[in-house]
Length: 178
Image 1 (cartoon, rainbow, N blue to C red):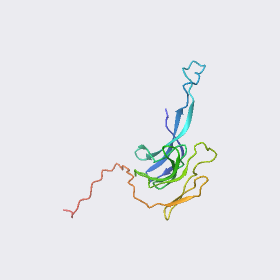
Image 2 (cartoon, rainbow, N blue to C red):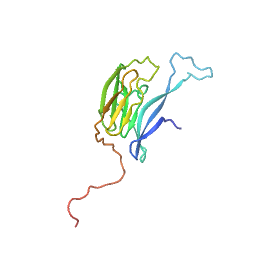
Image 3 (tube, helix red, strand yellow):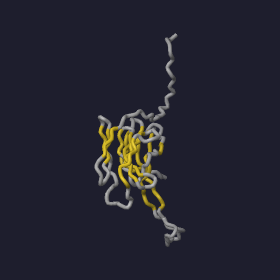
Image 4 (spheres, rainbow, N blue to C red):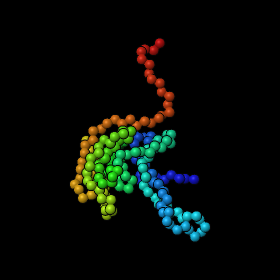
C-alpha cells in the first residue's frame, strides 16, 4: 500500500540526487466531532498539508528529510539553485520573516537576515513570493510582500554532499611501481 506522496517539481542537485517536497495526510478530526452513523467508532476527516523537503539518492533509493533552518511548510516557498535553497523563513515565535539561504550538508544557513514582521492572519497574498537567482555573480533576490526587494550576493562554498557510490576505491599508492 502506497503511503508516501510528494508535491510540486523535483530539483536535480547532482546527476545522482534530487530534492522533492513531501505531502502529508493529517487526521483533522476533533475529539468533539460526532461519530459517523455507519457504526464506525469515530469519523475521520483527513487533510493534505505540504511537508518537509526530501533528498533522494537515485542509485540507492535512500531518502533523507532535509532540515532547513526557519523553514515553515505553510509559509516558505523554496527556490533551488545548485545545492542552495532560498526561501522566506519564519522564526519559531512566528513574528518575524527572514531571508534564508541554506546549503545542503551545511548546518548553519549561508544567509539569515530579518526582512519583515509577520502577520499570520493576512492571507490575501503570500508573505514572500519565490526568490530569484542570478548565476554570475551568485545572487538571490527576495520580494517580500509590501516591501522593496532585497538582493544578496552569495559567496560560494563547497558543501560536501555525500553520495555513496558503492565503489570500493582504494587510495593510490605513493612511489614508483615495482
